[in-house]
Image 1 (cartoon, helix red, strand yellow):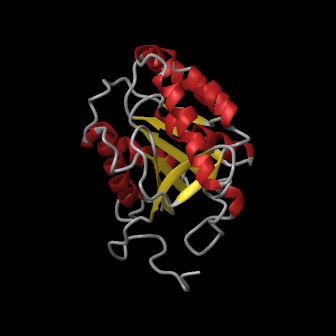
Image 2 (spheres, rainbow, N blue to C red):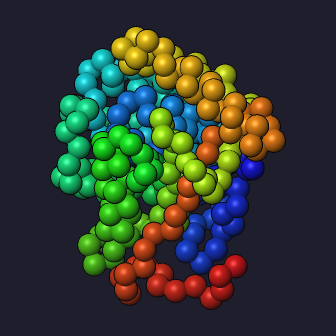
Image 3 (cartoon, rainbow, N blue to C red):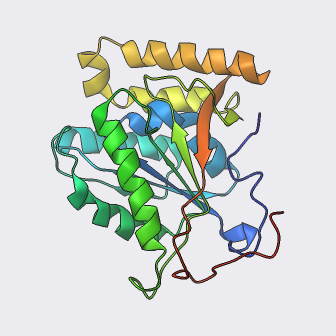
Length: 236
């Protein structure tokens, strides 16, 4: 169990100084950021780590709710879209690349490729591809290499998570932020509040704390000598 996802990322040859660490959260829909990582986002912000959120879909109402929720969590930058919930396609990859190059995150939090929701799965695959192309110096003069990608839980639980983040101190803020997504909570008859409460309690029991959020972790691919730094001196 850890208190933040950057805690175990010590500054190394592929990374900027610790003071420059930041997080980018890429989600398929407004409200996913709260359901999957609300407590984790707030925890990183409270420790001085700048965090941005990109939603691939949205409309006037849901984007307003997203901004309100992100304000509660202390998010620095909110990137919104005017797009139907199911209109996630490969053209959005360039938006993710642009957000990576602007935010220059150390890590990305996004959906799991094992999620039952096809839009979540598509978002996760787009992020994996965007992380690769954003790091190519052959594509971008200001190329940026993300160090790690974390997959969050929405409705599908990870059978074998890599990391449990202690959100005991930020759970109430996460619930307050989630309540800002009134249109979705009403449509689902409050399911997401109940599920988030139950899931974080379960993960807290597994982590030995009151509340926790679970993530899988993966590293970007290394396809060839296309990056600003193409090797490391040690695995430690």
